Image (cartoon, rainbow, N blue to C red):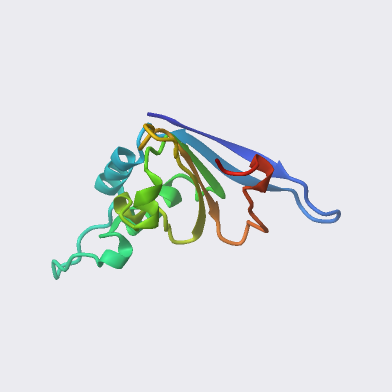
Length: 144
């Protein structure tokens, strides 16, 4: 699985320098396996006391995801396709590695909701805190 990234130029106000924004898009083909790999490769070393990370940190997952994002340029926007997480897992907070909450980012989810499509596809966009001025599903029309 590969991720693509690009740096988008933002229009800078007159008299200021031009800024860039890192955007990463990744078709994960299942977020749980991708997160398992990130946690196995980017988890911080265990403390000498042997104490396990708290469940509030997703069992250490948040630190691993933060390390992964930092290693890959701390993107302003991370777009993931085919997460395959049903809405029921998000609403009950039973999603893998508590991925609906990533420190420093806001997340926006779209899940497959048609009968017979449980866990199919879906997209999630993580946006660095402070960059979102508003979000609405209204441009997409009424949900069915």
